[in-house]
Amino acid sequence: MTNNNEYLIIMPTFNEADGISIMLNKLLETVSSTVDILVVDDSSPDGTSDVVANFVADYPNIKLMTKNEDKGFAKAYISGFKYALENGYKYVIQMDADGSHQPKFLPYMMALTGQYNYIIGSRWTTGGSVVNWPFRRLLLSKGGNLYFRIMLGARIKDATGGFKIISTELLKKMNVSTIESQGYSFQIELLLRALDAGADVTEYPIEFIERENGVSKMSKKIIVEAMKYVTLVGLKRVFKGKNEIS
Image (cartoon, rainbow, N blue to C red; front, side):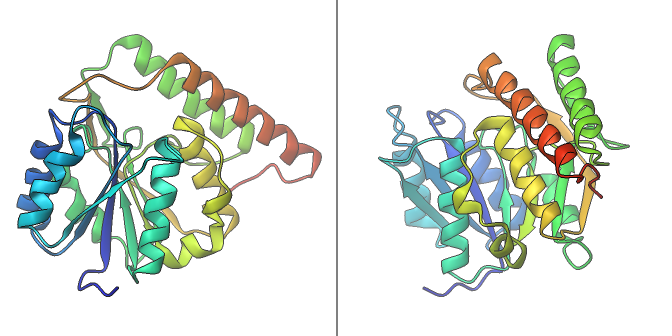
């Protein structure tokens, strides 16, 4: 299959019927037909895929992939990455479907692809911010990212951020099909693989807005898994004498 666009937005969904049309309309207003959009739906029982299918019928740059097996956030992204590589895209864009990642920042992040091959829409770099988070959530996220920097010797301020652009040339070097992590751990493992593959990483400040529609899928289990993952990887790197990441 051939495509006319260099960029592919990948958005995993599960029960996002109430908000996916809002997000797709905002993306269409921002990037028009210059970016392709792939919604990877985990067979949502609320009819998310039906809503997206209506857009697919009207907009050639919107695609729908429905997964009945290998479900989950990470598997959805990995399926999207595979689709991008098979169809000749130059860049993939990770975005949440719930409105927390605002399309208005996309043009600024896309403008950086000539200099960097891994661009993070960052909440915690200078100029970044978060709206409508309780203090406990702020503390968990900032604390988790600080722990990441201490344990792995990294300079990245938002290692768990899910709004990013990655070149497909870099993806090819990252062997993403073998990633097993979920949630925050997935974002961290993806970043570590990129760094180990020699990525040129930058962080662009964004305003992150707590999801506008539906119910958050973040859980204590996901946060604990991420902390365990960072600890394990950090200890392994120490033992191997590789405890500094650029």
